[in-house]
Image (cartoon, rainbow, N blue to C red; front, side, top):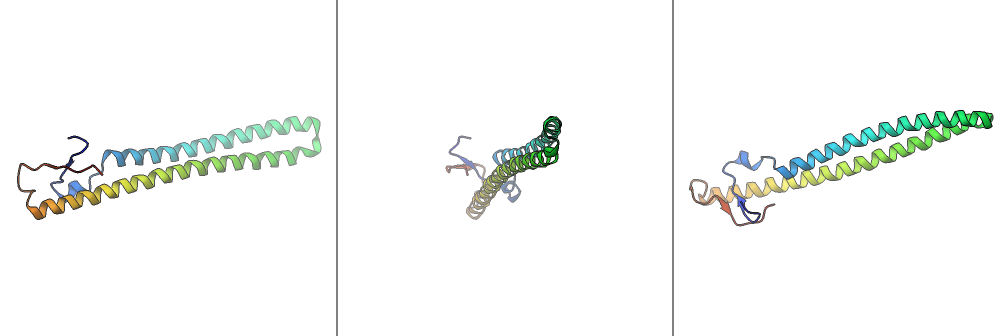
Amino acid sequence: MSSSEKKVPKSLKECYATDNVSSHLWSWSDWLELWGRRVFGILIIVGIILTIGEAIIAADAYEDLVFLSMISSLITWGWYAFLEYCAYHVLSLIIASLATIVQNTRITANVALYNVAKDEGALNEETPKSTSSTIV
C-alpha cells in the first residue's frame, strides 16, 4: 500500500484499531513523563547533597549564615526541580494531545470510509480494497 492509498475498513472494529503513529506518540508521552519524574528526583537529591556541602563550607567561614544559606539553597534547588518537572510534564501533555488528535482523526476518517463503503455495497465485493485518498 503506497502513501496515497487508504485501506477501507471491513468492520466497525477495524475503524477503532490503534495505528502505529498514535501508539508511538502515546509511548513518547509516557516516556517523557517518566523521565521528568526521574530528573526531578535527581535534581532534588543533588540539591540536598550540594546544600549540605555548602552548609559545611559556610559553617567554617560564617557560622551565623549557615541556616540562611541552607534555606536559600534548598529553595533554589526546589525551584529548579519544579521548573524542570513542569517542562517535562507540559511536553508530555503536548505529545499526548497530538496523539489524541491523530487517533480521533483516524477513527473519524475510518468510520466515514466504512459508512460510505457500506452504503455503496463495496464491503461485500472482493475487488475494491483501497481508495485513492491521503492517509489521515
